[in-house]
Image (cartoon, rainbow, N blue to C red; front, side):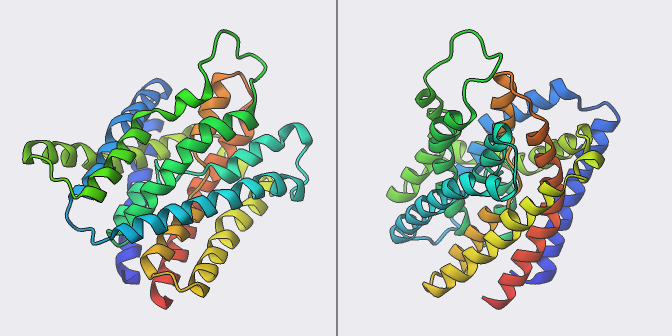
Length: 312
């Protein structure tokens, strides 16, 4: 994809985020409606867009590409889990706060932002890699992620077993999408069209909700934290660049490289903060990380994808 097209698509995303920011400031979106809309995006629209991407007919990926994506996804998260323990130490984060930086390092916004951005600016086959990454994300967050976060100070009550969290609509739809892809299943037009229409709502809603998230955060206070900026340089710039050069050295194709670069460059995800709130943990570090990295990612993703699209 050419530089002007990438800049145009990222410009559209910026405008959608700005719309969400404005809607929150005007009181049209509030915290309550934001949570409900987030549930719609996560449980309905995003899964539909995953399936719609497979059904579109634009993908020319092979079974070998899917197996390659699975191998890359496994390697990607093995590395991030190790980095999650190392990075907070390098940043000299207080021991009782390291778990938050650990989660920020491993669990970035690969779905809520990653899927719409991949669909907007990357070749169609890149979505296959993004789907696989999001399956790994779900499998790990509800096991490794909840273990790192712990039970919290005020969780109270009974909690379902963490493994049950794996069986959510996003993971189930992602797996079904891969089954459809693997066996080349054709859905009836009435179902395929419905999935497409629902999926089309994802980009606007997810970007608007990110804008609302930035609007309700203490963004100006957050940007004064030097650790956030060091984190951004390492996690959102150095890591994606390293991914590109390592994959290029092993002769992976351009689409796979760009997809994994994007997955390495997306900002901090919402799920760790949601889980932290649920169990009574302080979410200041996580909310600050989400706000600052979301804004910065608009520039960093544009820079990285534009640069590597032109030289690969």
